[in-house]
Length: 236
Length: 224
Image (cartoon, rainbow over all chains, first blue to last red; front, side, top):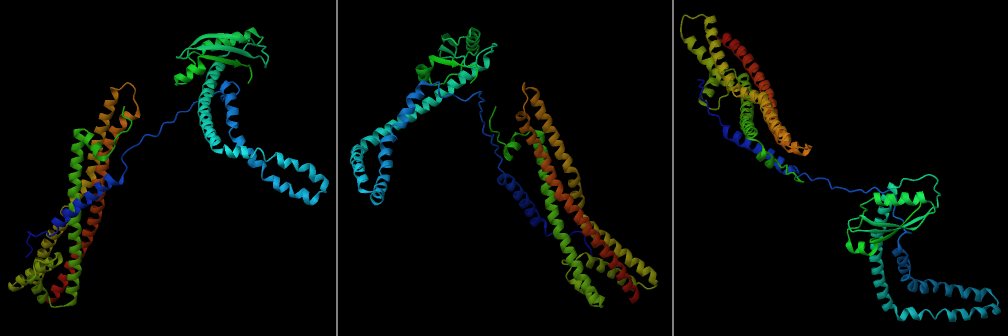
C-alpha cells in the first residue's frame, strides 16, 4: 500500500520560489543601497591673528570716494524734492504773509539742479555703471590686497620679539622690497619709532618672516607688493 | 590614492580573493538549496496537515471502515500520511482476521506493527531534508566567518607593505571580507527559522498520527 516512490509535486515551484527569493534579495542589495561612498568636501580654514586693517591700503582711500560718488547725483534731487511741496503749503496756511516772501526765492533756486541730472540721466547711468564695475573690480582687488597685507603683517607681528619699555604709540614705518617668491630683498627703515630696540626688533621679524605670503596674481604683486610700506605699532 | 572607492556589491565580490569568492559561491549554493527545501517542505507539511485534518473528519464522521478503505484505495495518489497508516492497519487487520486460529491479541499486535511501520516511513518522509536545513543553519555562519577571516588577513597583509597605514588601505578589504559573513548569515537565518518551525510542525503531526493509531486500534479491537 504505502509505496516509497512518491511523486513530489512541489519541486519545481519551490525551486522557482527559492530563486525568486534570492533575486529579490540581491536586487535589494544592488538597487536599494547607495554603494557609492562620497568623500566629504574638504574645507580649508585659515586662522588669522588679526583682520586686515583698512587704513594701511592706499587704494582704499581712492576707492572710497569713488564708491560714494555715483549715487550722489541720483539720490540728492529725489530725496530733496518730495518734502518741498509738503513743507510749502504748511507755512502758507499757518504763517503770515510776510514770512512767505523770503521763502519763495528758495524754490526758484532749488529746481535748477533738477533738470541737470534729468538730461544726462542715460549718460550718467552709463558712467555710473562703469564706475560701479570699476569700483567693484577695484574693491575686489582691494580686498585681496587687504587680505595679503593683513597676512603679511600678521606673520611679521608673530615674529616680533618685543623689547621692554616700548611706548604704545611707537610707530615704525618700513619700506620693504619684496621678490616674487615672497623673500625680502630690502627692509629699510623709513621712519623710526624713536625706539631703536623696537625698530631693530621689527626689522629682524621682517627678515625672519620670509617668505612672506603673497597673492598668486602676478600683476597685483607687481603693482602693490613689490615695494610695500608697512607700519608697525606695538599695540594695535 | 583614489579619492572615491567604488564599494558596490559587485565590485567588492569581483575584487575579493579567490578563496573568499569560493566561500561566497558555496554559501550562495547552500542558500539556494536551503530555500528550495524550505519551500518544498512548506508545501509538503501544509498539504500533510490539510490531508490529516480532512481524514480525521472523514474517519470520525462515518463508522463504516470498509467504505473509508474503499475510498482511499480508489484515490491512492491523493492519500495522505494518515490515510496510508489507516490503510496499512486495516489491510493487515483484514488479512489476519481471515487466517483462522489467531487470537485477538495476536491480530491486534500484527495490525499495530503494520501501522507502526507505515508511520515510521511517513515520519521519515516528512522529516527528510530537515537535517540539511539544520546543517546549513549551523555551519554557514562559520563558513562565512572563515571567508571573512581570510579576507581580513589578506587586507592586513597588504597593509604591511605600505609605509603609512591608513584606514583607507584596509577598509575595502575588510568590507569585501565581511560580505562573506553577511552571506553566511543570509543563508543561515532562514534555514534555522524554517528548521525550528518545521520540526515543531512535524512533531505535532507525529503526535496526531500516534494518537490516531491508538484510537484506531481501539476501534478495531471493538470490532474483532
